[in-house]
Image (cartoon, rainbow over all chains, first blue to last red; front, side, top):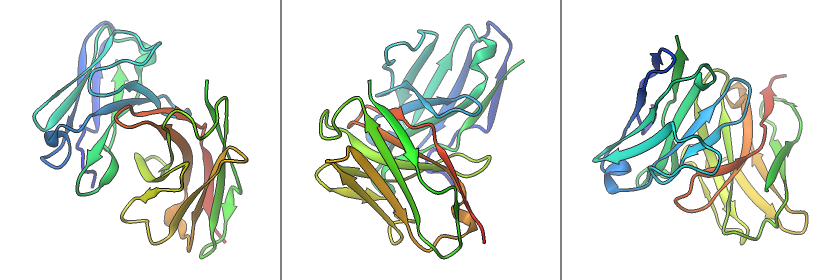
Length: 111
Length: 119
């Protein structure tokens, strides 16, 4: 059971906007610890997509954006493309479980 | 540009010790304020953080694994290592090495190496 809860799957058509939620608690996101997001394409290592809630590393398209509010965070992907089909993970710090906790992951399907 | 590369046996017998090494290239392991982690992914499952070590030797481990885990850093070889003792089939997974700075996420990852625990 992950400390951070993500929906198992989301889907959207090309060009659409989708959001992936990451729900935590007062010991992690609610305590204003930063949230990071990763994209894992099939057969490859995870790639940092968003760090510190809403910052994009160099090279990440601005179609990807992140936000945090209360005990939750969200990853939004606009202008959905076929190559966005991947697994997405959120990650944060938890004062009870340790310095690194991951969400269970969300599989994005592009219809 | 930092690059990470895992190495080690792909098959370990039950009850034995799993040992992996991550070689860091492109920058000294001691620079940049990085923490050096091991993360694993069971087949078809999500990511599980195992633990990290700082170049000074300070380490922190996942609470459920800390009795079996040791992560060490060798600054002379620019590499860090994972030892996981008393393995069972439940430790079969792809093991990634990765690095992160405080509040900045894991920005560098190795490609991952599959370790199977089987007799």
